[in-house]
Image: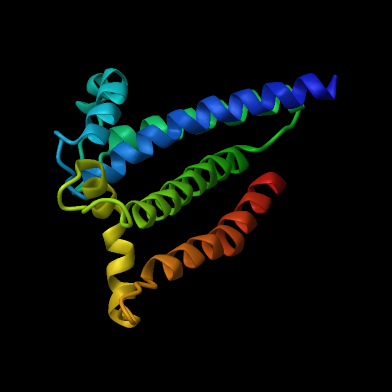
Length: 188
């Protein structure tokens, strides 16, 4: 029976983490004023608009943060946790559930930025990010993180180490912030 439970947990995590990730990408794209006409933005907006449009009237934006998308991601994280608890038979208190949902969102957000950094670094070898719309969106998503690092460590001999430093920083955030918070949520 644990094999079936493991398979069910895998399927739940895969489906829900993808959906949560799409809503978080929407939040990030809006926060960096990404062009609606870029292919990545079109995909994300078309996928999320049916769920966001009815809620947007109740949850307006707070500055650059689209609260409707963030609330949808949070609700999906709570549903994912409930389904995983049902499969595993786990029990959590209310505070544990809320913290676990926040940790889920933070973890997925860190992975999104990490992979955006990685893909942007790889694409820089093949395309000009000013000319390619997907590369331009990746630059908009990652530049707020790498720009301050580039000022601290300027490119040496034509090599930009800001991507490497940012990737290490994101992994450290997962190890030193997100993992302890996940452990705390499991105990609550």
